[in-house]
Image (cartoon, rainbow, N blue to C red; front, side, top):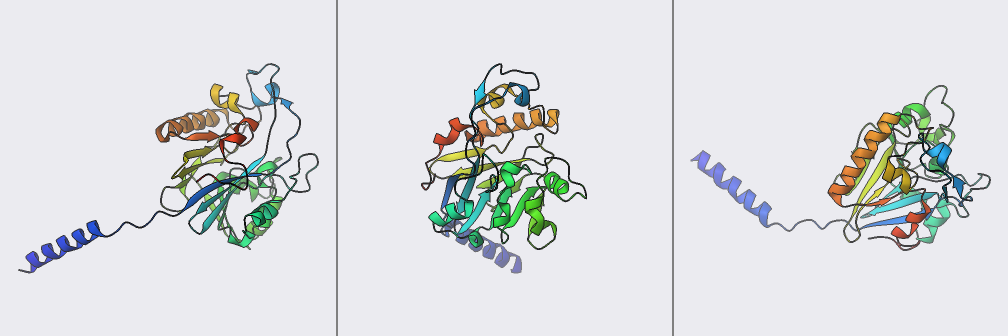
Length: 272
């Protein structure tokens, strides 16, 4: 009898679960910020292809940061150049841009960093209350007793000292726990480089590159910059991302390519 009652109870619970209303998905949006003043078009052949594939090609580089809204939680992806950078400093700080859409720095739950270079980390210190999400390889480089050249460790002092929260990410990370925002482990440019996959209900899936690639030709032709940390890892990460993009039918946003600016609505509008 007890066994029958247990089976009946289990059946009632299963039925209740099946008929209970599904929890509403959180409201999501993706906003692009200008995080550096564009420099003049530059020749890319020598630095951005170790097989010298681009001839006389010159391209306009831009510097982008992104805000993901997930319900009442926010992830800021990369923080661009510092306001003190010569020639390429942003015209408006991230704090002031957020203020234009009625957000304060303390409302940012996470700051996700694609990698440790200065054009992606310059304003991270403006968000000390945020939990820092950063690749473990990047964190190890930042916290090294003698950081290597190009490792922009200075803005991370609060996290290095243990004053702020940090989560080193060794592989992929499901940021909000529901598959809507994924940090993707894409090493090669740097040891712990990550890209970001954002799954929007209306716009669809968006893949933000970090510096996995710097421009369309890099992406299309598997171009590897001569200064990348690891050539084989770069190519493996590119192969992985292209398959993810195909499987998710995602739009690729190359953070440094001026030709990708129009793929998202102009600030202060956001992709939904």
